[in-house]
Amino acid sequence: QAHLGSDPASLVTAAAGPAVFATDVGQLALVDQWERTALAFGQAVDDSRYADLLSWSRLGPAVAAGNALLAGPGLALVVSLLVFVWLRVRVRTVSYSQVLAVVVHAGVVLAVGRLVAAPLVYARETTASATTVGAWFPSLDEASPVARFLGAIDLFGLWWAVVLGMGVAVLSGRRARTCAVWIVSVYVGLALVAAAVMASAA
Image (cartoon, rainbow, N blue to C red; front, side, top):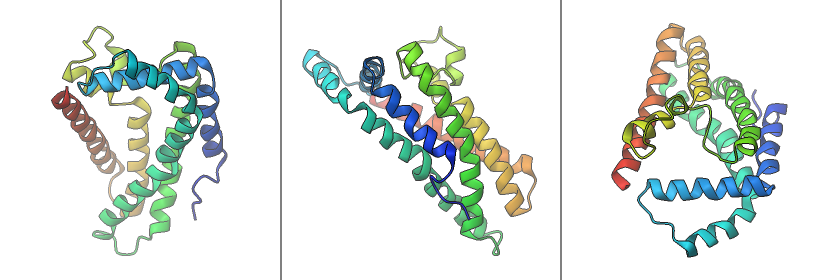
């Protein structure tokens, strides 16, 4: 039986983000993230709104803690429910606790990614991820659809999808490669949708 948030990785990653965003550097990086997000959706950021973002950045530790909950236990619950529904159609004997255990253990990869990202935010003074595929192509225009698409694909996310696919293969009795390719395809597809939404809103 998997217990969400009971493993050391969850506890450490839950503390790493708030620790960074409690600093001036982390809060300025958070303001930069909010500004880039607003611009990506075609919203102008004038002096007044920028001042509001600076004020809200003082809530950085709380924002980071909330993000950790969503990216950790929250994501695990949603993904495990979707995988369970999909598996039950094919394997009637699989239990939700088995699926949850697989998802939680695969989530260790995402936890490692968040641990890597926390000090990079402080060192680079930006929340822009250094572990996305888009980081390999710095010459691309950040506002272009291709850059947005590649920027939405994280290397740790791809690793997580492969590990999750291997776990699903064990539960379903299917080939690990088939399950991994299927889950990676879903992950990449969601990145494509996210890029399309940002492009249409710009």
